[in-house]
Structures are given as C-alpha cells and as structure tokens.
Image (cartoon, helix red, strand yellow):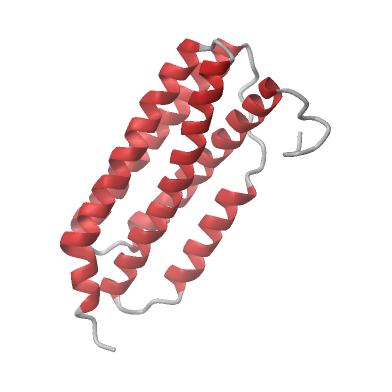
Length: 171
C-alpha cells in the first residue's frame, strides 16, 4: 500500500497505513539508537538514549497491541520520512570531529525523530477517535505522552548542557 495511491480509499485505509508506517519507524529507531548511544559523549545524553531505546521497545509492543485490537497483521510499510531523518542524522554525525558539537548534533537529530513521531501519533489518535476505536486511541495516547516527554527532556538537556558545551568548542 503506498501513500496517496488507489490502495488508500478510506480514512480506515489511511489509519492502517499510518499505523504500519509508525511501526516501521519505531523499528528503525531501535536500530539507530545503539549507534547514537555509542557516539554520545555527554553521560546524561547517553543515558537518555539508553532509556529511550527501552521505551521505544515498549512502544513497539504497544503498537502490537493496537494491531491485535484492530485485527491487523503486525507489519510495517517503508517510511521514507524516518529513513531520511536517520540518514541525515548519520551523515551529520559522521562529519563532526568535536565531541561536544557531536552531542549537540545527536540531540538535534533525536528531536527531529521525536517531532516526526509526535505528528504521527497525534494524527493516529485523532483518526482512531473518529473511527470509534477508543481502546487504540488510549494506547496511542500513552506513546504520544512518552514522545512529548522525551522531546522536553532533550530540549532541557540541550539548553542546560549540550548546547553550551558545543558553543565552547574550538573553531
């Protein structure tokens, strides 16, 4: 099923496609986070990524529950958006020699991922409610709350520690 193709004819089709999209995205994120953990040098940032990896694994399990509630096969569809965000993050991180600047880049890249997920989960919740799928909407709302909290933690860390350290990096 491709986005904006004849395979998507109804709101339900779009909802299912987007569930599959975010399922794929979460799985890709679990593959990308270990590299981010390895590259991070700020101890709090590294710990935050480790925590988020465990949280993301829980989010995948929650999505599997949504698939079960909806009577759907657990499967993802390729998400060019998350693939692009991860590709850009890898390219950026690969170009930075100064560790403090690298941590700032990793933080910004993580926030790009969080913002993408926030938009997806917010949309899925709205559609689930519209389609009368209250139980799915509640599960998706749990994940949305986690994604927003992670974004807020990343912002606080960036402002308090990571960005000031990067600013002191030698040019």
